[in-house]
Image 1 (cartoon, rainbow, N blue to C red):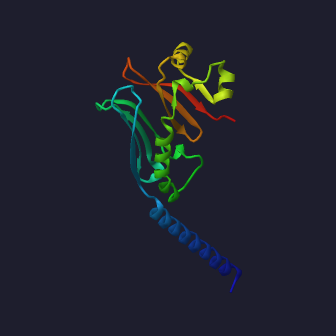
Image 2 (spheres, helix red, strand yellow):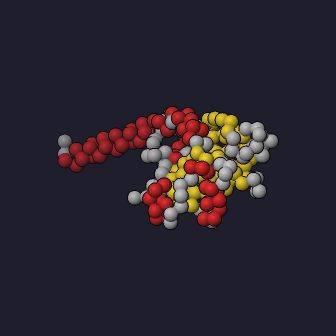
Image 3 (cartoon, helix red, strand yellow):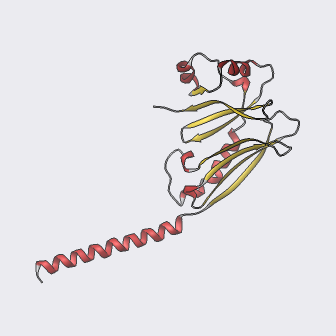
Length: 192
């Protein structure tokens, strides 16, 4: 056997191995890329009405790695007072590949529902300047300071809606009775 034919055999073997690996990888990807379609809801008191509002969180998309997160709050009369949409994979604390991603959807939905309504405006931190406020809370006030102070000092505490907006960012919103919609008052995040 000549050196030239030996090289050809080696190259053919490499090509066949490479093509076989690609076919195997494509078949695994096709099998593991699952769709995500889950929704969960909870009754909450957000808008200040006598009847409970409905907080709904859903993750939907095919494949799951391209799914969207939807977080809504609807009053008892059906009027939507809060609506958020974002990429599901961007809400994960680290990059997760199929098929593991689809198994996290239920956990994610439960987590959002469990932490979304745990604070009120009575819990708002005293404002002490941008840098010191961020150091104390990891938040930035995004409404006029007078409005923030009025919410914080109000005799009637309002529920705060909190949820992640990414893997290391979040927001806080309150219901605005005048506009009958929500208003984001703080955005937060972890910056290194």
